[in-house]
Image (cartoon, rainbow, N blue to C red; front, side):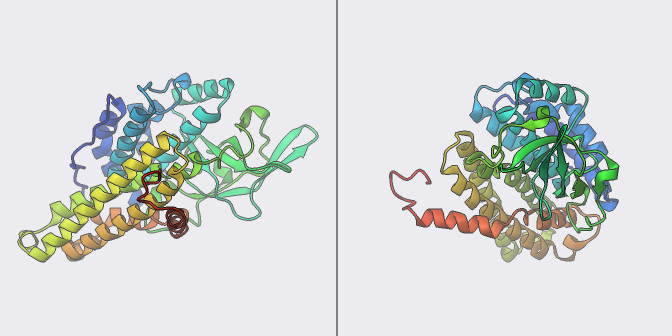
Length: 379
């Protein structure tokens, strides 16, 4: 079955060419997403569309030929809308693109002039980046050698492994905190996707990638020890993947509306379910937008707000997936429908990085202070 176009109203941000570019390719990404879901491989054609549209450099530092924005707020709102549009089209591609955007931000925050030039050269030739932090024990370490340094260990859940050109990986130097290292990410000999047998998010290729024997130079060390996990940027940055997830929820809501039969539209119970789905989706949008703006301001309290936002988006996703099943019945489980694909993708994507723990940390922050107090920046 050919996927229906992504027809939800297109969000617009202040003077952002990227939003128009994402909208222009959304339908093609949705169609390609069905193909890559059926035969899970790295979505090369989809990512080529991202590159051809110029979206791979939109949010790069200006020094690396990224798009200039009026200020951090306008840049953040544009990023929010682009991530939503791509997430609406295909959550796997949205996850890959969000990782690339994360890498661009890290270059902007911590990159030396020579590294920004390297990034510019890579983007000019279509280079895409990932950010890999998850690892099996004992983790990735940087060992000293007589001639320099060598990496030892591997990364797991390495989105884009074998497909993206580069990745920023966390590694632990002797006696130091986590250090970001720039490595090649497209070596098939280092890539193992054999365990990535999942119902959803298939095309992300989130397998394992061996870093054993890679000898980074000092030019490959991005920033200082501990920069990657420095808050509020690290935790508050979760707003970006919630924006992609939100796009998937919005697309699912659109599909529910299109699939509702006349009998369901005339049934007040089903209309109430649809109304609840609309409310859940819109509530998630308001939280994600507020979270993004707080992160842009680097507000210290944006950490707790981001942790709570993750739970809000998760709840919205679960509620809209349930609504899809109850309103459209067995149609929602039919192979080849976008409702089925989005549901499978969302069900996995919402598991990212301990949502229950994040919500608990947010609850503790709210318990530590009165959220309605006039001097409380959390609210």
